[in-house]
Image 1 (spheres, helix red, strand yellow):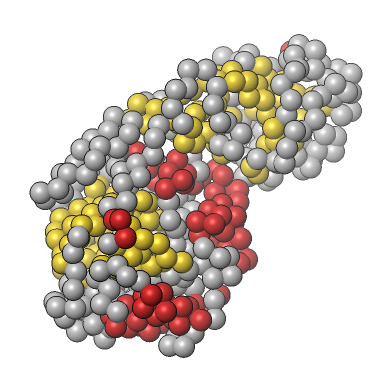
Image 2 (image 1 turned 90 degrees about the vertical axis):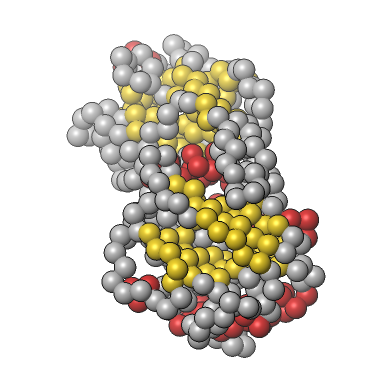
Length: 454
């Protein structure tokens, strides 16, 4: 169950050795209860159902729920918006398909609205609603519709004959609510905030790592397996969007293996859009720190993109991209690691690592293993190379779950922790990088260090 507390997240200034990054802007949660709610029924087109004390969404016959909210008092940009609904505590309240939310006209009254007078949709559906269970809090991403103050009106419809029954605002239980997060996202381009293996509606740990992002400036590097289990549009809307989705505008993601459980990772590429790179590739690059650092993002799902071997399209692109870069320093990231303790690495990525090594790349970030691990700089064959080797971090601590055990220890592994959720903060300075692991509230892990560019 996803519960987001109505709090103001006060920015913290966390020092990194001798450098303190700029303070993040405050992120504020505004909660607006529904000002109107009711449903209509195609079988009784002239009947008003506002006195029923519940909201129904179903097909065959169509039963459509309508909601309105008065949004006031917003003085900063909207970062994210969530529609929150609570289902009834009855066995019949759930459904295998909750339908879709759509924007509607707002000129309707809950005491007179009928199927015959219902407002028409005024745009495409905003978000699909995942499987709905009885006595459950349902969070739905509606960010695209909430741009500022004003009256916001939604409809929820479904073609599934299994009805979804929600609490209405007239009951003593919490009724529908609109949660709006405002603030100015941190955009300091000298800080990279990295973690993978992130969102799952069955866990609240991604909510805790999202709260770390709320208090940190920087570009967010989502290191793959961004939402479980299959990276569907429904999972992005219900599980990722309410937490890490608050920082979507500053996120530069890498695609994981779970995203490809949806064919062609279509849910991932649809959710992140152009920020994820071309959908048939999933690799791209960008610059940070005023052009002093180059960042390369790759796709570790080799079978989906023509391989990762030497001469593969991705490997050729990588070498050309690195050769064209004029930045002194470079960091790369993709989801699954080459080196990992416990035998959880894959040699398939050695040609990509070789290309990084040949170009004197300093840092590689991975996820996939639900642990934190830092390696000393090393060659593609795993030999220590303190002068020009690539330093690899595994940061699979974004919230899904943890793997506490390391059955074996890989050569050059310097630090390991499988018991703490959090985010790696990588500060990119001229000719130098500094790292600090930022754990979630209530956990501790002292991991900080410095490296130099070759």
